[in-house]
Image 1 (cartoon, rainbow, N blue to C red):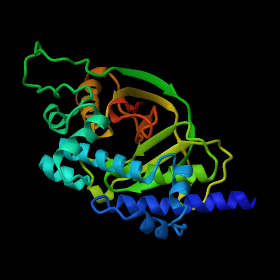
Image 2: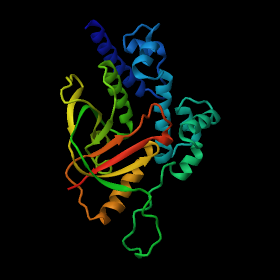
Image 3: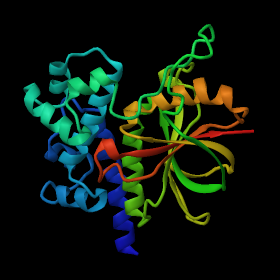
Image 4: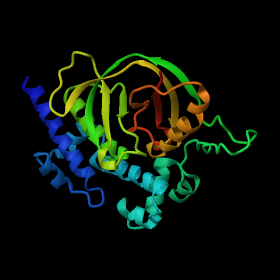
Length: 289
């Protein structure tokens, strides 16, 4: 029992460490400072962190920074040198090497190509002729009947692209409770195109049994079953706006289907901590009537 309480305490303290680090990506705290945030001995903090989180502090920091860099390359206007400095590199050459290792191509090429995943075809202009030549099969959609799924959910507020920090905190909680992260989901309650960033609501979720006891910031939730249109995207999460635009702007109007009442659900089909972003697979699930 004492061992279980200790493990749970470590997990809760690591949640604070992850949140503290995520808020300071430009000037990350030292290991000693992070140990103090979590009230760990600086002598053993790194071993405790790696034991529960499955990666080192440096690996977490690099993953967070490179994810932010990919988003800035796709959606921002900062120069490569500026983005490199924000990732902790004093020159672009080492940043380029790190980005290539993570994403499979240099950051300049990544920006020019608009990412490395399958690019969505443009949403058609209704004034264009019907015989326009465009690839309408850049993504494949399947209709699935999915069951109810019980999950442990941690709320995230604000920029959807920053939900990875909430998943890291949820991962620390799961490790402390001895819960394997068998399936993970993001549930997105608001349309980012029509909702102010500060008002956007989402949940980081992992599947659990219906009888698992939860407390604190982690609550029990149920992802409702039913008919879903499912599109699988391969590539960095920063590129997910592409399949969303195609799903709603091209597939849905021509599908004969109607969107149902319910939030968008993403299921993350492989482990983002173990694989490069080019191999991340995400099932984008749209509820149907």
